Length: 333
Image (cartoon, helix red, strand yellow):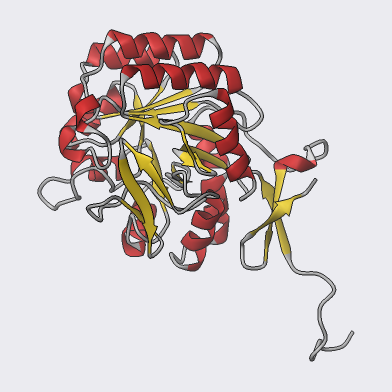
């Protein structure tokens, strides 16, 4: 043995992990679910994210005309499998005050048309995540959706802490991108964010350095159950694609690493899941083992998907490798 000195090591350090699972992928590779709700569109998005280290994903259709949701459901049924783990329907049953970049013209109360879409997806064996403002849904409607096996998530919501707690008791088991598109946690009204942190619900977090301050992420992770917090990218079409695209006829572009609309407001994220993992550890100061679980085991548990593990018989193509900087280095096979 001898010190390296100026010599070059024979191999770079690598970490092998089960392929990450992203529950919120709006687009990638220049393709957006809302504008290309077809099997080929979903497969193109999957390919863009797989090239960046994400094994499985939920393509996400946001608030739009009912026909767009229905087309996305048809596409998810046709393309389900091989990395397309289900469908995330984010809206249209959200609070107008917290719509973010969602189009207000298409926001509507929960209805039978959406229930029919959910039922069709579940009958085809497709896992479904539905983000809605729980304060705008009748308990009976939530119960019918939950009975189908749909995972209900509170998001884009004005819910008070009391309304959020009621929703958790009525079958809502998740919160979409904690802190974003909901009232801020306040000392007299903790709101949805505060109720979520103190609950057993799974909560998604965007760790891109833009959506949530690192200190706020650390506070949430310190207070919430370690096995209930997970990472999402909220990725848009620019991930693995051009630096701009159109949504609802409006230009969305990457500026200084942030994805913004013409008003300068955040409009989704320009980040992939492995980058979120790396940034949460290196910039957020969160222990690596927790960051890894937040990108692999926990999102799968939140969606009731079978766990992935590295063991004898695990396909090499399901094992991601990260280099010493925690950047995606390739699939094992």
